[in-house]
Amino acid sequence: MKLPFAEPYKIKSVETVQKSTLKQRTQWIKEAKYNLFNLKSSSVFIDLLTDSGTGAMSNNQWAAIMQGDESYAGSSSFFELKDRVKKIFGFEYFLPTHQGRAAENVLFSAMIKEGDIVPGNAHFDTTKGHIEFRKATAVDCTIDEASDTSSLHPFKGNIDLKKLEKVLKEYGKEKIPVIIITATCNTAGGQPVSLENITAVHKLAWDYEIPVIIDAARFAENAYFIKQREEKYKDFSIPEIVKKMFFNSDGMTMSAKKDGIVNIGGFIGLRNEELYRKATTFNIMFEGFINYGGMAGRDMAALAVGLNEVLDEQYLESRIRQVDYLGQKLISYGIPVQQPIGGHAVFVDATEFYKHIDINEFRAQILAIELYLESGVRGVEIGALLADRDPISRKNRFPKVEMLRLAIPRRVYTYNHMDYVAAALKNVFDRRHDIKNGYQIIQEAPIMRHFTLELRKI
Ligand code: F0G
Image (cartoon, rainbow, N blue to C red; front, side):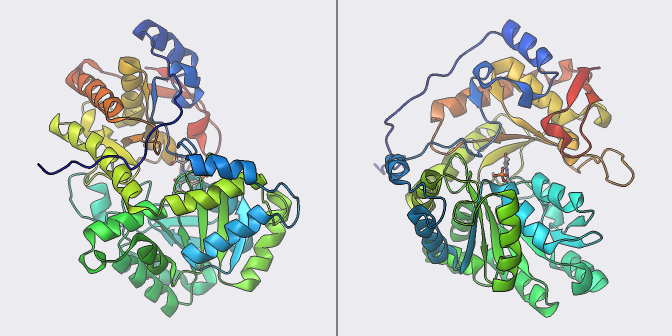
């Protein structure tokens, strides 16, 4: 008998999670003004809100925590991390930041100005937020297949080269300070970008003399998909693929809370000294001195270990398999999901799920709330609430497909947890026609509203 795949780790420490009743959850979600970000974590049984900063660190990472050097300047933990980043990604210049959006804030302060155009593949919300905050425009050039949830395109995070070239031709290097490739592409459903596409974008960018930055939050998961799905690279190791992904890039922003497998942290990697010097000033202003940038020495020490662990192919296989397991289970129940299943999360197609409900009533939020009420499982809306209002017309923006994202923390939940989530969602699916109405916004912030908005039941 062929032995099945099993996780390449065992569990040393566990944390109890609380179950609750429907009555309690009905009260809690009402008190949270129907925004799942307002729920206490103690009111949640299985938390799939995000895979960001929620992973389980290894014994070696915890050991590194004790070795962290907390010096303000010249910390040895900084130099270890800097060396690790250079080795893995090839970037000479390195700035630590407290998380991914801080890296965006620092780098964009040095690169982006009012009126600029920033093309890319479905920019993540903080990326778009930092672009729009500077009165610049993010242009989404993702391939059309990304918004067709049933298309089995293996690299739905790819940039459509024709769309990109059109933007480059129209605005040129005077207006376009940078092209951003997000790998994997979170907004498109944790979908990978192929190495062929990354290389083609670099070539185009080279022709137009525009730098390329990779948003590398889930770089290792992307590299694993390249190995699995891009014939040419099937015999390459994960570190070799990562090197190729970043070889022609001008830099990277990193939320280490994902593929760094730490609870907090981020950084910028750069090739150009002048840009590094410019960014350094902003790093000192916003984050902290260049040798820690908002992280403790122990955080940097744990991250240096995490960046190595994430490159282990056995780990990546267990990670991607678990996400896929949940996705396949939902598919077998007839639930519409983004296919193929992405790297860090299963994205449920709420537009299809609740197609009988008015688009203005926030279908993906309805689904998130119903799943919570059913089971205590918390997912997150990736739909019209997240898409925010158009900065000029102030009208709600409706993505082609609204999704409920079930993001799976790294090394945290078991296959039984996945079965529980799938069964809960099946129950919600079976009674979908009982739901007739959704929600209305009663309070919202002018930008990145989804984190804090308040809703009322219609
Ligand atoms: N880029 C991508 C692709 C992300 O997914 C995130 C965060 C960031 C940048 C910002 O990083 O949170 O460290 O400031 N994504 C989280 C999520 C919040 O739930 O997907 P951060």
